[in-house]
Image (cartoon, rainbow, N blue to C red; front, side, top):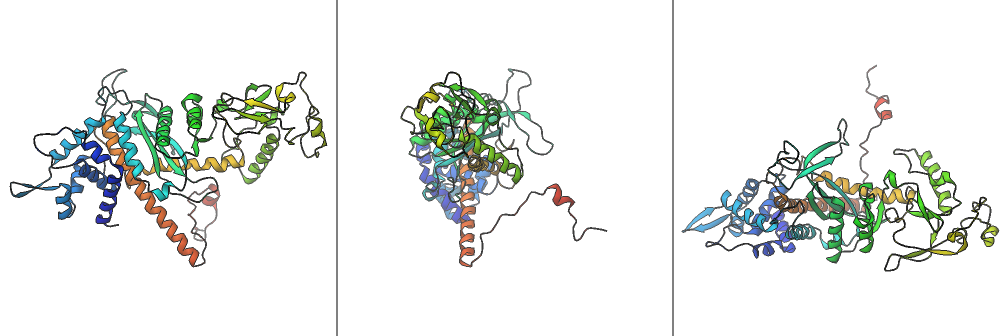
Length: 502
């Protein structure tokens, strides 16, 4: 796309967000009118990001100065000064940026973004998702990543730093030869749109974003942003998250998401797996309630090993299906307070139990309960029991953890990893240390908003190109283009090659 077309798209995005007039209304009015408006500053920053440049004000000045003459006059990069054209200077860019950052910053910084910063970030990111794309799915994948500050960390514990809002954080080293390490900076959390279960592919757009100091837990911060996202009229469906989210106390994550209609698709922390207490006699395990006569070997069934073979997955799924026979089944949906009712598996015809005489007429392909409790609990004497939202609060989710349906649904969470990688790509925009050399949350929010918007535009372009290619191939009678398999295993490396030396 040419520069004129890109500028038009960015102008439409900034205007749709309403952020520029909203900020202008909050800026002080000086004795002399500013040459550079907030709208033009945002466009300059976005143009710099679209060209793969870092978050430096000099780059925004270069982007505005490189436009055509008509656009420079229109956007304030050229202005009439005593009858002669006056080109935009860095000092003027800096002055407008300082005024904007003053609006976005807190009077007493505490490591969390201000209300104005949250609104600005939500407005820009929200405007970057076109309506046709936003209507394709309501499901999200969430994850947080490290964002290192330009400032050096303090030399001693409690010592001073040029970035007082930053804090020590922990990041994992998942690459070859990398180790976990500490860094001085912030946690950046992103909520990325993913396809619905069994639905068509969608562009993986960032719909929700928040940033905060590493001394603050990023999980409640993301929960708050998702609540604000729902209040703006956006539907929330499945929310895929790893065990870093599911292991938090329920009031900080699970309860808040269920209250806004979210359906959890989460991995379970090792400390949350397996039997964890009982409710009216039923065993609480991996987010479900099971018959008290469930074999212990089935209750201790974990998730399949990573990279398991097809035979291993088939054997695991067979055990998971047998375990599902002992699960108490829902007979009602959640009411407004989160309560529901579940029924005994023998009543539902999933197994044979002497305490339920009618179930003994079922075929013998169902499991048969042989060891009965001495004093049958309520789950065995009543047809149904009531389950409050406090039972399995952290672990309850849409599918049985580890099952084939859960694995297919949870696989969508990789979109969150791809979103993090696209903003750390040295070929485009890399938010590693030095990307932004201004300290504090306000400048980070100001630069991250247009960066995520430009990233979403790239994703939309790539998605539309793939859709057009698939349509072309369908008309030609060809199968959809398959992505290349990039991973090479040991078998590939040791396999004999036609060109191998003797």
